[in-house]
Image (cartoon, rainbow, N blue to C red; front, side, top):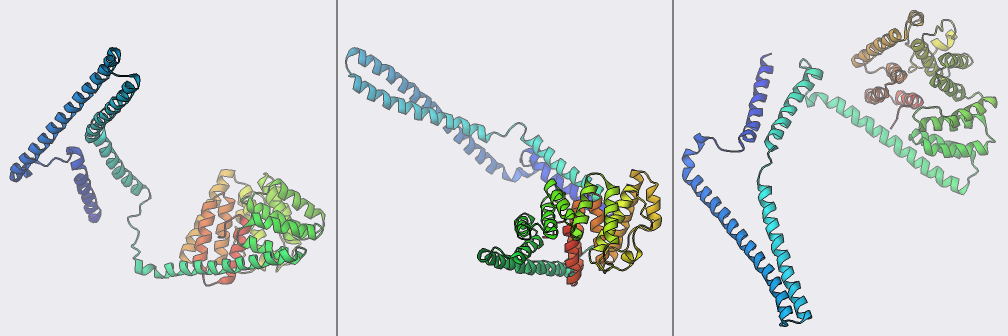
Length: 434
């Protein structure tokens, strides 16, 4: 506690040191003027002399202006007396008018200079107010979000964290460089052979991995045409549209998905994104039903199954839908390491079905908070990061989901497989992967 009192006193002392010359106008205290009376008197005399000289100069300018105006009147009289011709009079008038204008500009410049040297009446109060607002605002902000008990984190102790972030960045840069080279190579090949379906698919996939879904749409649309509107390519095209619209299933995307569903193609993107469209339109029951059918019809070892199961669990929990016994146990138990296999328990799901929307929201926030705390203690948990990212997206907290993905990249820098799977999950959830 003593240290905070010391810090407070230092802050007050610094604030006083800053505010004093503003309040007093920069005048030296009387105690400091004794030794320099002679110098002060000389300075005052010089200032007074300069001021008097300025006033004398201004008086001369006013006299010049009066003389020039008299000259204009004299020229008019000379014309009347026939002393000057019209041409001579015009030339003389122009010269006198030029001198009047120059003199008037000098007078105005002197007046503006004197105004600029005079401090504004409100300058000091405004300066004092701004300084006090900064001090009080800083104190209020610290009281709100400060953590006085937070332990120090010396720079030397953060070397591993900094190196991990740097390695993760280098990994992403190497990956992006390889993908950009692949895009350039495929583009060149397609210029020479635009009918190569496989290359259009590879180009679209590479562009999606680079988080360039708008460009990927063009590649997948060419694949759709060349494949005679194959359902798998329609689904890829729809996915590119969805990614380009921040995860929203727009009308063109839904149209492509519905056409793909009618084709009989079993590409899992079709059912998954149609379920996302149902959920976005407020039909959570239809979305959950569609996803359950998709999961139950899939091979147990399909890499995408855990992600869809997690979506089912989160949507059911958020909307109070009971899914007890509706999922095949094989598809729940046999999952890859980064599947999100630790979800809400059956008891949680049943309890959520009887809760109000606000109670379910509080329950979800509590679960997410506990998961985030566990990841702080054990960040080497790809499954946990995947769940946390999706949970934030379900709650509409996209910024927190993006932050979690970035933290996961640092924590899992040495697990390339986990990073690739996380990137897929992030992309499918609408999280930027660049």
